[in-house]
Image (spheres, rainbow, N blue to C red):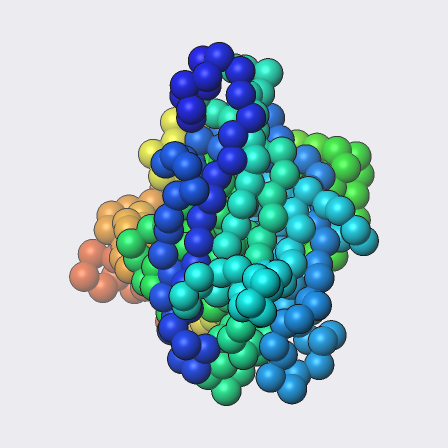
Length: 447
């Protein structure tokens, strides 16, 4: 039995309407009504009737005939429609293809009545219809959307993206596309699916909802791919498939998740999240304050510019913070296993934790003021609490500053302050928490 209408086998139709506030305000009212029965939108989706799976290819078409364009070029409205579909595709495993003529989702201007009025009653400025049917897993509570249609009102004045306070074609269409994908309204003004809407972009709740239906956006072929990602609006998130991939992000905040294989990820600009827990991986943060996380295999990571967070996996990792005040952790917190990691804070005042294994902490001229210890609250406001460096196990590499014959000169700059070993040669400062300088010997250094 289909839980949506109670029939043994059915094709149903859902209906959602949007209503606008006169076409002169950047905040417009949206309401939801029902054509026949109440449709639980979170139980319908494109593609397989399994939550978290991709949509497959969804074709869409566009007609702007009769739309009041307020003097703006038609090409700007076409671009706004393309951007609206691309925004949803950028955050979830959705695939849209534009076609001429009939499509899976047809976006048209509402037709006139015999009296020359819009078929959309009152101040309604957009309406979305969709049809659905049982999928191969009939009875699982999920139905498959088969086709949809969006009407945009012919009565009000429109602008492509809300320019001059005129009703935003992009914003209303972004909202209506959400309905045709299976999303209902929410009560959160920061989300595009809210009513009334006062935003022109996807919010975190919109992104979470669409991913619950379709999962993360997948990129690549499963083979060895070289991909430079395009800027696609809010929430540029990418899930790589298998193979040895080379993926470069965009100028804004990306979240790139590497798949199986030995991958090379580059966040480029923005504050990026770069995660790859499988294979032998090379990850570069680029500009911005990035977070880089490794996993089972060997990680070679470079934060480059900005205040970065680098967390290695349980392999033998090489972490370089680059410029900025960085936080580096060789192994996941609390991990029973750990690798022999090599940590270089770089320029700036850095916090360094090697974790388990025989770790090497590397310092060069201009390294700034760095601290070696156990890091707590790494993602919010990281602080150092307790000893991490183990004399006789871990090592401090000062070979870029001193030669092997300069051990005494190097060691003369060490002292103990408040129970911690402190190195200060007038150029760089190193604090080793929980270790007295007298606990250190020649074997604890690489020169």
